[in-house]
Each structure stands twice: as structure tokens, then as C-alpha cells.
Figure (cartoon, rainbow, N blue to C red):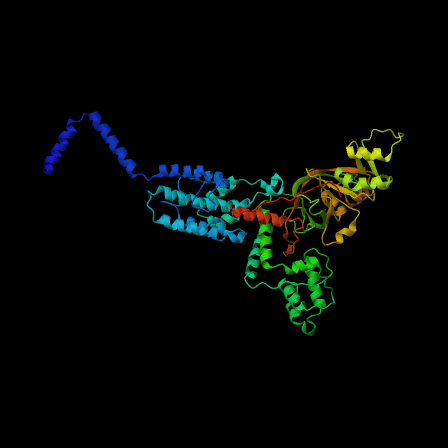
Length: 585
């Protein structure tokens, strides 16, 4: 048939159709053409929603992503449930920056292997060769990269494990996963993923200092491990030992012994001379130990810490800082439990805080808890309301063997119904105490273990800061000696700090109140945040790091939990150590 004949036939056919039917056919043809030219976005959206709803990504070794599902849903909802990383219009720079962040996660003390970077790199390469119609694969690869980035951002901003697993109060788990999704999406849209760590990591100078130290110790950890120093007994200045050359080398590596002193030992290389002694004293002073130059158990432990051990401690310290809540501006009081140290800051940027030694709760039996509370008031010349546990375990045995024990200790019983002239025997008094019908308290005075002032911030553990008559204990290197409360070395100075904005209280009136005959409660005009924290690494105001003994075994517990989080299939168990807090003492 000729073209002219075909044209005539088509013309005849169109002419024989009713006008309304022609209109319908033209509309149907237009819709079909539009549908055939569209990209498969609707099916992409369905695939994304189905994968997110299942909370499983078989591509990844840790397939279950339920922990991050809400943040992932939010991320994709902000992108209309379309591909975030792959497909037309998605910047290659974002993909490259994302992989780079994951690869360099170790700079923030995180483990890149957890995020399966190499697997994701292969997925991105394969995705480049896929047609846009390969919806299932593209969605799978896209979501896998999103899971890794949300996981990384969550670890960096909130932490790798939940602090509540370690009996931390809820303020330490206050950060929201929503913040992670919003910040991640913002940096994706602005093609600024390289800036994501700065946005999500803790905004604390301490964190940045630990991060810098971590990089430095990683560089030191590349060489062969040096043998540990082993002294048969405490090494004292003036004594001799064959390990003195190794000791000097270790002191030089720690930056406390000058190079000329290292070289100039000469014929006295086995002699614990003045230069080496002064270097050890500098190290002891930095670490808050008694600076006597004697190399005992704790000083030897410091000298033998390897770069690898310090790296592990730094990573744990950085993890704990991610849990830290935002502190309001104004005065605040910090106690680092394993450091046996208190800092009282007038402001966030205070470079000259009040610092003092403290005594904390005994390891195992009476651990001082981590807490964040508001100091409401203080009491001068306080009574000591003796906790029943202390009364039953420590005082009742003494009372049974000594009828005058309570009187000699200036302890009175409160809540007794007996008349003053009613005769009572020792057994009835003991029974009243045991049954809880009466409670015991020690009157204010020189023998009261709370000293002349206590600082109250109401909390469930019933612990507080307080003075103590036993000042000699502050000379010890290890000071976990109390029943759970924190004893302060310079209570008068702390009272001056706490009452600093109350004009009616100056040094003289505080001294008078601390020497007065009666208990006096002073309510603060503005409450002061008090933070009891636990970290075995801390950078001081001199920018030097301190490494402290893990007195409560919390580093070990945290390391176990982090290993379990990185490898959920491994047979590991987190055992929370029991804490028996008894207020007072």
C-alpha cells in the first residue's frame, strides 16, 4: 500500500470515530506517554518504606538496624522517601565524603570496621553500573550507606552504648536521635559532610584535648613495646637498681626528664639520683600523687602504662564525654571520682577554678555514684543522721559491748516514746534501734564525721559533699575511704564559693557559722549544678593529661559493653557492679 493510501485510510478511520471517543483516546495516549517517560520514583519510595519497616539489612554483618530505625525513617521522610545517595542529581561528593568520614572514624576514638566501609565502597561502585530501573539493588545500597552514616553520627553524638546501663541518671541520656537525622540531612543538602563531626561531637574543650592526645599516642604506638619496670620493693631516692637507665628513658618519654639529664647520668647510671628523683616528683605531682619521689605501686603503674593502654583509656574517656548533658551557664561543681578531685568553676570558661582533694566511697562496698543534681542549701554545724546500715553493721556491735558508747560518741536517739525517768536496759535500746522505732544521730561537734558544714543537693542515693575532722587521710594517694559521700579537704573555701553571690555571707560570717554552737541552714538564692563524674583520663588546666587508676572497675565494664556493641553476636556479658551507697561519712 502506498503512503498516500495509508494516509487516506487513517483519515477515513479518524473521520468514522465519534468526536468524544477521539478525545478519550487522545487523553489515554497522553497519559501512557507521560507514564513511560517517568523515573521509577513511586516504586523506589515503596521499596525504601518496606526495607525500613523490616528493620533488617541483609547486606550488612549487623543486619538488625532497629536501634537506628526512627532516625533513618526521619532522614528518608525529609527526602520524600527517595534515594539519598544514589541516582540522578545525587552528588558524588556526598558519597565520597561519607565514605571518608567512616574510614577516619578512629580520630574520634571510634572503630571504622563497625561501619563496614569497604563493603559500602564496593556497593557504591556497583551502583554506578546499575540501570535506574534496578530499584531493589539501588535502594538496598542507598539504605546500607544511610544506616552506616546514622550509626556513625549516633555514636559520635550520643555514644556507642547507653549510659543508663551503668546506673547513670537520665540526664546522661537526654540527647535525641532526631538531632542526628536533622544534622545529617542538613549536611547532605549543603554538601558539607566533612563538617559533620564538628557539628555532632561534644562541644567541650576537654573532648578536643583528648582527641589531640589520642592522635599523639597512636603515633607513639607504632614502635616495639618496651619491657615493664619491675622493682622488688619501693625504690627510694639514693638507692641503686640495675633498671635505672630504663627508668630514665621512661621519664624522658613522659616529658618529665630533660634530655641533658638523660645523657649526663654517666657512671652513676644505676643510682637513683637527684635529677631522676625530681622527674619522678614532677610526674607524681601531675597525677595528684604524693610527690615524694618514692616509686611505689601507683607510681610504678603510671610508669608502666603503654601507649596502647593509654589509647584505650582515652577512647573510653571520649565515650563518657558524649554522654555529658549540656550544662547551663554560671557556677558549677565537678567531682571526678577516680581522680579524688573537685573543681568549682564560676563560669563555663573559668580558667582558675577552686580545686581541692576529696575522699570518695570505698571501692566495691560503698561506691560514690555518678550524678547531676542541683545544690539547694548547706548546713553549718550539721547533725549526722546515721544511716541504718552503718548503725546496724558498725555501731550496734560496739553498743552491745559498751553501754556508754552512744554517750561517748555524742549520739542521741530520735523518736523515742519512753519518758526520761523510765528505766531502760541495754537490750531494749538495741531492740528499738534494730526495729527502726528510733533513729540515731550524732550531735554537731569536733567528733562529728560531717565536720562543720555539709552541702546538700537532694538525690536518691542520699549522698552529699561535706567537711571532715579527719584531715590526715587527704595525704593518701588513694582516697576511696568513705561510705559513699564525698569529703572535701577545704570546706571553708567551698562554702565561700557556694555563697559567693550572697552579700550577707563573707569569710568572717562563714567562719563564725562553722564555729557556732547550733546547726544553721542557709538556702542558696540560686541553685548550683553538681556533677559527680567518672573518667580515668583528664586533661588539667596545664594542658597535661592525667591517667588515674580504675578504682571501681568501670573502665573494664565499659570496654566489655563497647565490644559487645561492636560484635553483638559474640558471647559476652555485661555485669553491672553492685553499688551500696550509704549517706554520710
